[in-house]
Amino acid sequence: MASLELGKMSMKSHAFEVVNDEIDHRLIPLISLFSRKEHDVLDFQDVFRRYSFDVICKFSFGYDPQCLHESLPRSELAIAFDLASQLSAQRAMTPSPLVWKIKRLLNVGSERRLKESIKMVNKFAQEVIRQRNKLGSCSNHEDLLSRFMDKTKDPKYLRDIVISFLLAGRDTVASSLTGLFWLLAQQPEVVAAIRAEALMVTQHASLTSLEHLHQLHYLHAVVYEGMRLFPPIQFNSKFCLRDDTLPDGTFVKKGTRVTYHSYAMGRMEAVWGADCLVFKPERWLKDGVFYQATPFMYPVFQAGYRMCLGKEMALVELKSVILSLLQRFDIELAHPSLTPRFSPGLTATFRDGLWLRVSERSGQT
Image (cartoon, rainbow, N blue to C red; front, side, top):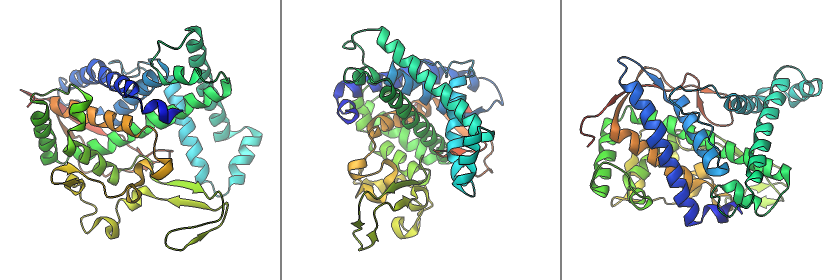
């Protein structure tokens, strides 16, 4: 159902409108405000998390949490969501599953905090569904939840839909943008090429349509190259449903957990060549046109039947934010000597944030 809805042009257009409305009316004004404060730096990881939270809520549920307001308000929901994600991931770091299972049984420590966080997230999901129900007929509502509610009224199922889209659409986009801007802040020649391509395609300095966005092949390559080095989901696992044999002849028994590590795969010399650690968007271009030989060597969006449902929307978000910010601002790392270190979580998170110094560009060309 989600695949069908997300593939419709009406949903793609709605996503483009939501993304650019958030950029134009919140993201750009916020960064402009900080750019005028001499010597001030801003944690762009926090900004991108706020931005993506607003976008996924507005697109999926027709709800605006206003996390990116210029006052940078404290969101109890976002805090609870982050904590639930972090504590869930930390379960895998315990010496044995028995540790967290006993803590859950006794309702103590991290498991108690996890339970409380999940309760708050569930409460939010139920309130969103209640508000959608109050609006009555869903025929005039563009959000994704309303379209699901046309098909089912099961409250638990709808609650799980809300939480799934929050998890899939918020943290992955924010993580991808964080890695990309850490790279771009050190690559002035790449930034210049992005600006030049945009100017050539649109004939002016602003993005006007999805069609323009699809013509930006170099920008598309930049996004793919950035996520090769900094995938938002660093590793993933599947469980074998029945006995199977991999293409190389390896037998996989039913029930086996099979894990692939996107972060490591994107940095393998055997796959990407001797320059595998170099940020090089050109590796994705063939005669100036974006080209991907196979998605299976680059499983950031997964591949085959399990391809990410939100892939196209994520790409629209990433490219729109990169283009909009680079056209208006110059960026530099506040601490260029620091190498990113990651915190435990379901998605990649820079432990110390992404602190950038920004300045408004003159002429914006």
